[in-house]
Amino acid sequence: MYILNSKQLKEADNATIKSKGITSISLMEHASILCFQWLHQRLQGQNIPIHVFCGIGNNGGDGLVIARHLLQHGYHVKCYVVNFSDKRTDEFLTNYNRLKELGEWPQIINGESDFPRVDFEDIVIDAIFGNGLTRNPKGFTKKLIQYINSTKVFSLAIDFPSGLFSDKSVNDKSTVLKAGHVLTFQTPKLAFLLPENKDYLNTWEVIDIGLDQEFIASLQPNIHYILKDDILQLYKTRNKWDHKGDLGHSLLIGGSFGKIGAISLASKAALKIGSGLVSIYLPKCGYSIVQTAIPEAMVEVDSDQVLTYFNFKTKATVIGVGPGMGTAEKTVKGFENFLKENQLPLVVDADAINILADQKELINFLPKNSILTPHPKELERLIGVWENDFDKLNKTIEFSIKHQIIVVIKDAHTVIIDKENLYVNSTGNPALATAGSGDVLTGIITGLIAQKYEPLNAAILGVYLHGKTADIAIEETGYETFTASNILDYLADAILDLFKENHTEENNASETVNEEK
Ligand SMILES: NC(=O)C1=CN([C@@H]2O[C@H](COP(=O)(O)OP(=O)(O)OC[C@H]3O[C@@H](n4cnc5c(N)ncnc54)[C@H](O)[C@@H]3O)[C@@H](O)[C@H]2O)[C@@H](O)CC1
Ligand SMILES: [K+]
Image (cartoon, rainbow, N blue to C red; front, side):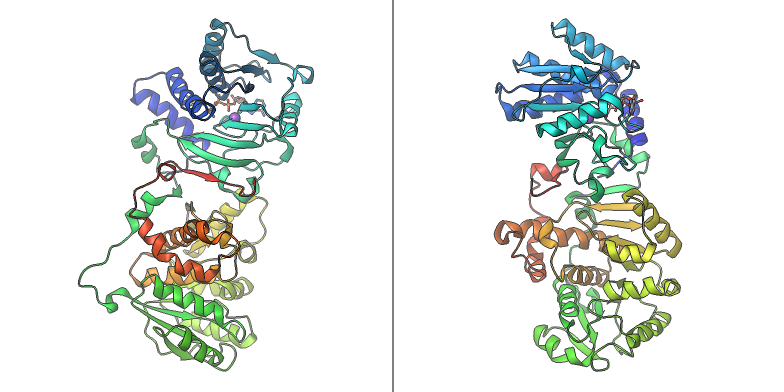
């Protein structure tokens, strides 16, 4: 699924109005009725006070439409116009008049003395600002947002939590209305998926308002939200005549005394995801451990306790390097020599990333389309500090273009960056915040490249499946007892789930952002 920015969304609105021969008013009516229905289905006519706060733009127009339908269905509605400007849009004015025709005159809020009383048990519909927000809310509008937040009332945000920008960072945290739930139009918004915005929304879902898909595709959006449908297009089924030699040979390089588990997990993962053959190259001290733990794997050893020589004989198709490797001086030297010789596709993780961050000139030896899988701290060592999450993404895009490599930024929403294209993952939960989870991801991606997946597709598919294991598992394991080994236990379920009937929530992008709330 595409993620559109604010400009693309406006273009898509206009293109749809043209191609479908409809008016902007009817598009607004349609979008807002879907929001009304969402609420009506849940409230079933309950007599709860609903405060609808409308701005003066088209987001406010949506609020007015929702208020009208709620009134017509007998709800206890109070509608307000947050009068921060006199530049009311035509769509706002039309719907303002339609509401008045019903005998309902919205209360105009011109200052703090006009703020209504809002109780915790009430419901707020936030239709103050949407996609048109260009600057921080100021004056009494800012105060109103703070007042509503202070009541801790449930608020249903229309399209955006008011105060949250679509494509740039919020610099004043106190100007965003905290949403209990967001009904956002047509596509997820990048802002919802960034860690810096986690406090502004609890859950969100996309409401499909029927914008012109052909037009949207013609914009060639560079940001994607990866759902099951996207994954099914990448997934390769096996052929009857496949031989283990056709399914690639993964070589996992890593481990050091005390950290043999990391390379062991990565190697198991490469096997579990279907790599035809798996070899491990590690320090001698890990030999018996991996031979016992993974009888399917072949093993070659380096010096006693840390990797030093990197003089393996294995002829692999792809190499995953870094888990548990450490950064001993001998290892750094050996890794440097290895990089200068190596021609094979690489998946680079953990300490191997730290070595690259320390000696940036080595990055130039990575083959084109190598994959780096840093967590945020490792990324910072690689690209330097960022001002905010948008800056982080831009800096990573520059890095990816400069070095022609793919970066997997591991986070609650892992983002895969391939030059200017961003792929945001939709699966996973905090159960994955556990030791060894990254090592398993490295093994999965390596094992997929072995099976002839393009590196980018291997990263997208690997990250999705890795997250999906935890989504399936938590029903049984809860968050706490889930460990990295469980990722491997549930990998089969994650793959089989691709072929199960879609649940509605998977057709319709949605998520819980903040698990505790
Ligand atoms: N036909 C359409 O264009 C549709 C629009 N829709 C709604 O329209 C919204 C976008 O509407 P608008 O573009 O009118 O914008 P908004 O309603 O989000 O913003 C209102 C206006 O406030 C001004 N503004 C921005 N920041 C401000 C600030 N800090 N202080 C004071 N004024 C500020 C802007 O110039 C903008 O015109 C979407 O989020 C969605 O809710 C939906 O009804 C779907 C159809
Ligand atoms: K809003």
